[in-house]
Image (cartoon, rainbow, N blue to C red):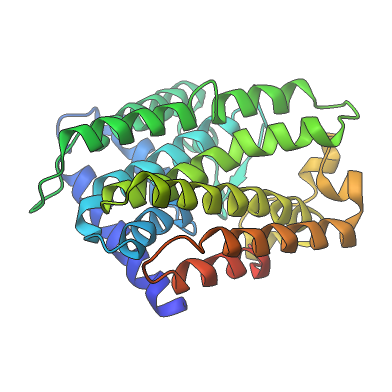
Length: 295
């Protein structure tokens, strides 16, 4: 899987460079530096890779999904910038580097997040280079992305997460938080990638189900890594959930039961791909990778 993952990741990096190069000179220098600082800080690029892989799995041309794939990474970066702010998670380390507000100040960090989020929707409305998409598909994709990352998705999940700090939340509340704060964007990357690849509704629904399961599993293992992970490998501080008295899967279920639950979700993700007629091996491998990751 690694070589293909790196191939898709490299395509994402080139697309991100194209996006920012095309806008250089039209954005205040410090704001552009702040936006690029966090986007270029690294990371797995899981969401864009998933978007491209879903497009490919249904027989589509990956070029059709490139702008939207970049949009997912740009949105993800905005969420990290805002989550790290003192008013939210108050973190000073991200991807092994000072968080955006530590480097550029809180005001510029807020504006960088705002700039990235709006840029992402510009990209979902952009015809891919050398490829003509059906405008109806583009509108559908933009709506799905908006719902996934708005108040019904990541924003709502972050609000619920903050409201439940220092509280003993139950499993239902915890799953709401994680399915919205993290899961909806991962699920949307899989669904929109399939749609951009020409998938019919049934295939897109199967890809959505797959994305929902791996999105959920991703957060279960993220909670586990916050307990057992290595800060150097992860590029961020560990043990933060306990310090902030957040409810996590290990806290509610114990470490071993959390692992079992995470692997169950991965098995369900793989099973959800059964209706997809294309080559889904990479997506299956990607699900397994989520359970094996160290960072």
